[in-house]
Length: 235
Image 1 (cartoon, rainbow, N blue to C red):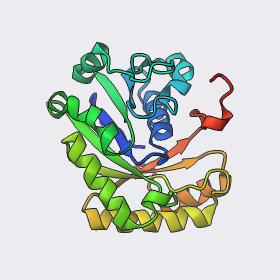
Image 2: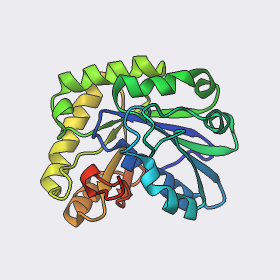
Image 3: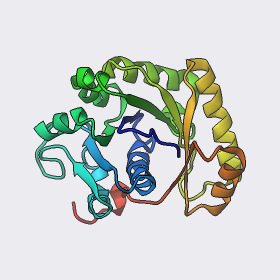
Image 4: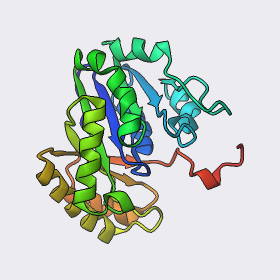
């Protein structure tokens, strides 16, 4: 991936199950690796589903030197996790690269809207993560509806599409190529460019296909950090 040379704020939005949280975590890790001396922070602002979260990766993120801020009461039995004061502080910290993992759909994007003024005052990029193999974004009409709702709730413009074409462990070259074409059509219809494409390292055929068709500046090779609900045994 290509990152801004000066501290920047990156926002990841998308539909439930789009993979935005896994992308946000890997994006933070890759950014820190490419800029070891930079201050990097990841903020988990998922007010909708705090149990499918960036906090799964809190330990490896912190071990990599990345600050992690999660919702107040997230990962507890409290029904209404809340934004924290430190989130606002980090968003305004222009010496830190900040990655925001925003909750799914328009309801989750409202948390981003709460900080819209602070976000708008500093250089930022807002991504819409799309997986064309997910039911609610399998056709461009449905995807555009979610895209509009997220943009309006966040009260910020979407700057780029992040292609996350995958069918989990069954992802191969065909899925990467077919999914990428579908995302390209969506990008053309919305007038928003594709700025990133993600692929899991554990799928070597998919990685080879992505490397053959993607620019290194837009390709994010990912490791697995975020657990699926049925993989957790601590709830």
